[in-house]
Image (tube, rainbow over all chains, first blue to last red; front, top):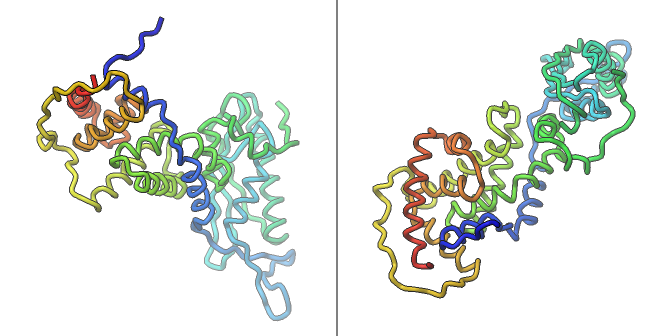
Length: 156
Length: 195
């Protein structure tokens, strides 16, 4: 049979451990609100047409997409299966606001063919990039498999 | 193994995700994943912060908010050298230090500044309510030097190991042992009046 604590410090310690902050929901909501409002550093990336031009019309208008949007699209595209997931994602953008390289660190589930996983990732990323930044954006996509985990990479 | 890209995991499934999976997703900007981290470790962080900052609800809420915003911005720097919980507690600790340093002079690392304790000779009712005990505990904690208070809370209430406490406080395991030893002794003396 478990002994119940008898000393005042022990009783107080047990009470402190069991304490659930009543105002947690308020604090949690405030934290999440602030996180969503926090603007993380981002760069603008120019959309490039199939002809390789950034001009969207005769007067040379340009369209830009935030790197934050591109990252989110790639993240979502890669988070669809149990076998692979992105660990880190770096976009290289040159002084002309063109996306020149994508580097991804990849985590795979045990048993996954890592070369096939890298090829699939590259295909997915290329599709997202073209969809988001235009058919003329074809940066090299470097994949590094950095870890393998047991089970679904989205959960473990 | 065939790569099966067929279905998306809804945000609600994050509650079953490991810390590592949550960090991976949040690091790439997934605020739903970060929201799960907030709900997983926030209550303990708030409890720790409140006891650390003299029981102030407002200060504790501010400390925890600042700690999480800092975590959100610096997830890239989390390399898994400690557990996610320890890393977050360390951020709370730093924010609390900052807040209290700006508010009022507080003895940070000098047990000589601790008041001399006299054991009370009064004899309150044995069967006290938890809330009264907690109030007494907070008063006793408030009288402890900062590092003793912090080490005691992290060990006895949050259940961290010595090495985790050392990481969270930015000190050595030996120092943690010293702070804990003195903190336990002084708290026991201060709480003795409730016996």
